[in-house]
Each structure stands twice: as structure tokens, then as C-alpha cells.
Length: 78
Image (cartoon, rainbow, N blue to C red; front, side):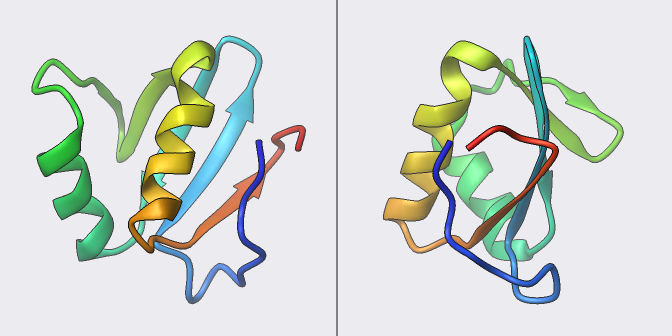
């Protein structure tokens, strides 16, 4: 998964994990609004993290970046 290089302080979303599930931690109001507008109402959260199956994670990250959100990764193979 390709992400912009960002320090955690300026990131809108932190992507954590790998394997079958990724957590997209929404760090800014921009990110929360983006999810409200673009992600299915059936979305699920684990704590504050949007849970995303691996088959959708790259597309979700790309869509966020195309709309100007800054992502950073933790424990994700790039």
C-alpha cells in the first residue's frame, strides 16, 4: 500500500495492521467527514478505527489520497 510520507502530527489517517484486516484511524475532522460521505453506512469500527478488509484497503487509501487526505502507515507492508 502506497502512502504519502507524513509525520503523525499532520496525518489525517493512520493505517494500522495488515493481514486480513486493516484499521484506518481517523485523526482529523476532514477524515471523519470523508468517511461519512464515501464509505457505506454499514461500515464497522473497532474502537476509533474503521475496519477494512484487505481487499478494499488499497482502494480506500487511494481514494482518500486522491481527495487530499494525508495517510501514514504503521505495521503495513508497502
